[in-house]
Amino acid sequence: MARMNPQGAGSILLLSIHGYVAAEPELGLPDTGGQVVFVLELAKQFAEFGYRVDIVTRRFADQPESDEISDRLRIWRIPFGGPEFIRKEDMHDHLDEFVTEFLDELRARPGAYDAISSHYWDAGYAGQRIAEELHIPHIHTPHSLGWWKREGMQGDPQEIESNYRFEERIRKEFLTFRRCDHVIATTNQQMEVLSDHYEVPERHMTMIPPGIDEGRYTPVTSAEVSAIRRQLGFRSNDVYTVGRAAANKGYDLLIRALPELREVIPEARLQLAVGANSRSDHRKIEKWKALAAELGVDEHIRWLGYVEDEQMADHYRAAPVFALPSRYEPFGMTAIEAMACGTPCVVTVHGGLEEVFDFGSQALFADPKRSREYGVMLSMSLRYPRLRERLSIDGARFARRMFGWRSIARRTLDVFDKYRGGFDPLQIAG
Image (tube, rainbow, N blue to C red; front, side, top):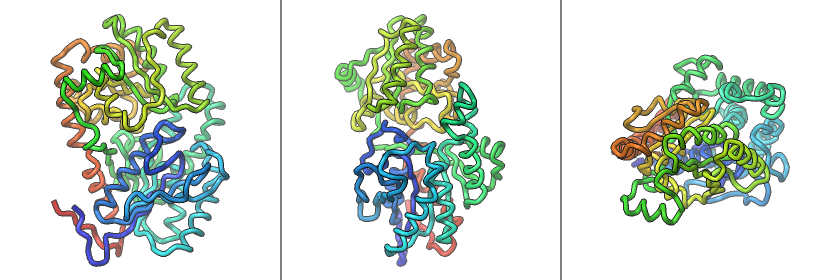
């Protein structure tokens, strides 16, 4: 545990400014998913180690000014950009206002920060300006990269650029990476993209993966799994996935793999917990339903809608196999959570997650853009009990050992220690 010195362990500012950031976030809302979980869990561990931590985000709609999570951890919301939700792709237009408003608020409050940890390009760009103003170190975690995401997209290039503003984003990313003190990547493949396409020197980067809640995502007995399946309506040949309703998540690719899977296992179905309840999500889901009808598999898909956070672990446990079919995935936290629950996983090769696994022992991976290949991989653990058992046991052990949040936080603080200057070093015992 953290041992605070007489001056205290210090204070850290975490910036994550898009989406619905809250003490109990409603995951699945627009721009609200794995990154929010990442920031919250990291902040909780920092607080456990004795730091005072502020998560600063955007205030809009009817959100309160702050959420007090503990005596050392709070979420602090800064109003900017008006009262309505703003897509992360459109944050370009509001970053100057955020910086100004935050610094004005900070001058009126006591206390100071010893380091900034920013998350995603928007917070990174703003965080660098704040760090320069306050003369403190800035450590940036990009989560995803504009160049990489653009490369994985299909469609009209002009329409894509108009919708996602990649050129502007990539320019801001480049400037952030060049100016900040250090970059934390979440996969080795992400580090390669940072080096090859953003000219980030290797000495300027560290790879630290996201973590999982070790107490929440755990295996249960076979009898408990059977009971959960009956309760949730899962069968022994179902494939499950969960996530935001986003094109990069590859749900259409998973639907295209279903006919191939059913050639091997005729009883196979998909259980899709996709999106929240927004109109834009419903429009995307209707397109995917139309694709399923076109392929003749619509009756073999259950659309589960939004899964409440407290139900996430049981849905993972109920699934005979979990699929991560993303076209592009900066990490793939849902797959790690499913593995920790003892569920065999088939992950995408697009994003680097497969680099950390032993194929056939901890997980399986394939290219979801190749529907037959992905369908065959999905069938493997459904057909072969010994493989299923190995993936379940070894996968859960691996997830717990490599992705516990306490370990991730320690490694992150080790990076901070290199740049904190006069900031008293954290001492960790045990």
